[in-house]
Image (cartoon, rainbow, N blue to C red; front, side):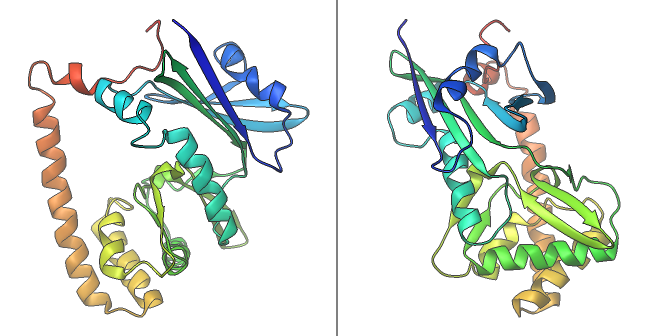
Length: 260
């Protein structure tokens, strides 16, 4: 099969294109693994700088055709362009350096997102202080006021750093972001806030703080968010049940490695 590789580098990228082109061939042999599930993330030291490389798995059969036909943009490309947009409007995210798209005979294979490795950990699902929750609500409200909406807004996609009681947040997994020239309406944003906190008390406090920062009614927003959260729980249970149907995984299965 003919393998075609397309490489796109950011204008301000410190990485020469020749080095970027070598990443697919050395990915499984070098670097430190940070994440290894459906997709894989490794950190490399290149020219004295730590570089984060995310390898996207080969999509399901249906999605491969959708991406290959140009109906949808590959995830690595979307994430790269969205990171540039977020930085432009003042929302923190790692600096994007490049992305790589591999195709075999015109059909999408693996893709790679290369960005700056930044310090910090995900906010996680453990208990959180009111100070952290309030500051995250302010960060989220600011993001929505600036017209950005992260549609996979979970604790694993928000990096956290803390200094003297002040928390700084940074977005990752940005391929799910969408943008508007106007502020995102509160009613549109609420469905994407319901996965942030496991504990109902923390969740209610976050939504109330978010509503206050957006100038909305905290009680009304909390009632709506709780209903949406309940619907989400029921939907998740339904998805688990559907996955038990024989043959379903043949359609939805995604490949991390050709040899696996």
